[in-house]
Length: 295
Image (tube, rainbow, N blue to C red; front, side):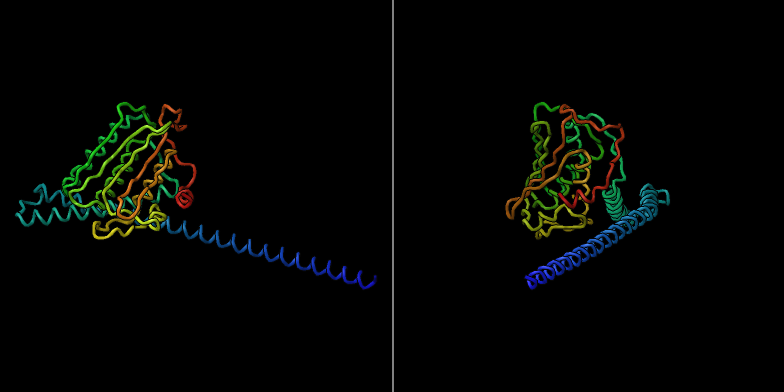
């Protein structure tokens, strides 16, 4: 009996020791995890600050280069020969491309940090889509691609920022054109689905693998779609577009498979569904980076 008591006491002491050790180990693990999360957050903040700073620093000299190129084009520095005119045009094209890259960096910095505002108002969404397609058509014509539009007979207004929604559409159209062969078709379909408006951008490209789909909306990611596309840009366009749709209480997704093209679907609430933002200029209240990672 005494031996049993000693055995039980030893078991209890051993169990208590194990429990204390286990709790201490878990506490240390939580502390290490918290320190790691803090370091990662600080690193993300430094990267975001660097992106914002370098983008702002690049905008001024690029604007100057473009302005002086336009002065030359207008003959303010004297008449240009035919070859000089070609060179000036190449300067303008290259500088404009660099400006677009800088704008992408700035937009992603603002979107990921929740530091931009939406100038929202009631919109005729069908007219907005028509305007975006009109802006995109020259690029499609240059590749002999057909750009088709399917609109509903009637659609209730949406409540959103026309500039930002146009930016989303133009990004999706540019992406579709990039991955679609010359002479093929890209189709844009707008339809009411319940209390939402859904916009589908359908291309005839090579499609996207499921592995790539899982990372498609991550910043700086570019899918390898073969020889059809010419990789350009920073791989931020889709991340920005999804962030802007999330800011409109909407979503952006993709349906694709290798050899079957891709369908990008942008959804947002209709104003008729009672959706409004609380202010005429509604700022995001939280950074979008966690949302982009979870989506």
